Length: 177
Length: 277
Image (tube, rainbow over all chains, first blue to last red; front, side, top):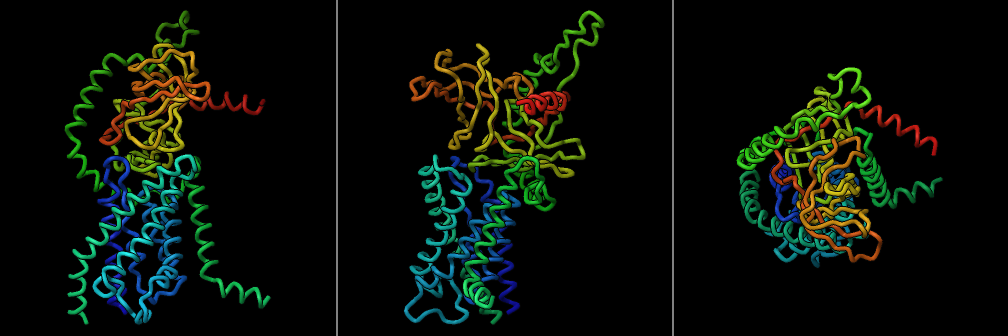
């Protein structure tokens, strides 16, 4: 249990650092700003109670807001993502349901399942975030294009990252367990 | 009553979701408000320290362009010094040394955090209330306007960049004096548009756009940009003018915070008119 909490904390700090130190500073072509930190909410353990899920998402969003000067927009998008998570998990559940304490990684759940799961929730998060950020209908299609483009980049980064760091995490688990 | 509790318990997930979203909405609205100093911005201690760290690394990358910009600006300043003063012509005959009174002072500052890729961009600068910075002061660079101070902490301040959906700057076409307002289109960090210029006004590609005397935030005549495209055939009475911004927002390193010493006076006077209306 404690190992798991420490693992979640390390993941939180790592993703926060990547987001705040690197991705927030990409100044390229004016369209590209992927938000990889959402992955933290997606990877919270499957047995987490719903209220804790919402609260965790809320505070994750607030921390990102503090660094990006967006005052609550990330929090709003994160809470929405957390709200959608149980439904999405139910929607794409494998035939026999989830085993208790399943690790939601591609190594355990399969690549196809993992990409579906990440894509749906990242797309939802980015759509909510970009529409809240712009908050007007006159730029509807530009915002839509921006959200889709950034979702694709975020998904690619997450899948790549999972293959770069996921394995070493597993080895670490083997040593601990 | 029991049914109510049962109902609340049954939909607790949805209700707590709604509750948190309402809190978020409240925070967003509060953050948009100019006067409120909220805790949720990058002027807080941790965020500004981290951002300083990042900028201390990235500053080296921009060193060459920064040097160029500073050299250019120095050359410009040598010929521009009298523009900082306004002429108090009522006093001309009494005493000649009171003709020039200083209206603007400039505090130089370093950009700690900056973005150009969002729809609403902000900067963080390393000067704060300890150095006398207050909200709603203007920020300019050697090349042109940058933005308006929003929140202030002891050592840092956050600035609403001109690249923001709500920013409007009163601007003037330098050659004929017509006044319009500049807004950012939201796509390109170099391109903005000049609104409210009537069809009969002669504007050509290459005309200079400067800040007007209407705003109490920026000094008059600060460069904003160069007209890059004029399209008079629009559906309404105004022309569609695209302007190439002179400020290089992507590589901003050193900026100046403008203090207007007569701002309170001008505001108080204009406030009287507002009550009258």
